[in-house]
Length: 133
Image 1: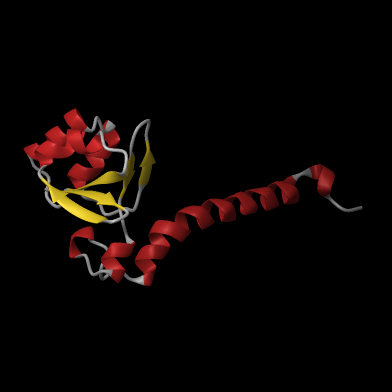
Image 2: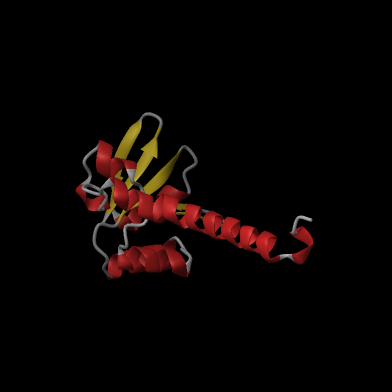
């Protein structure tokens, strides 16, 4: 597990045991990279950062779906751009095709709209009040 503190003047690497002290600082933010799930990651995310159980599940399963979870005191972000632009293989996004992105982003939004439109058209055609004279 890698822990970094990001400030306007640069990034410094730290030990996982320093996270609580880093969180007390107000001149930057803490970045935690968990490339492989282990007991240390479980402890840090659950007991130190008090992450929501859904965040823990997402980290455990490594499903590679880009997500943003906003919670009371922290923001959990899974990056996609780094996998393509910076070549970060650990993100799991390199090598995805256009169809992969269409499945993840477009199909879940387009399909319900198409079904809604078809349903409205069917109602219009079967409604006795809408027949022409």
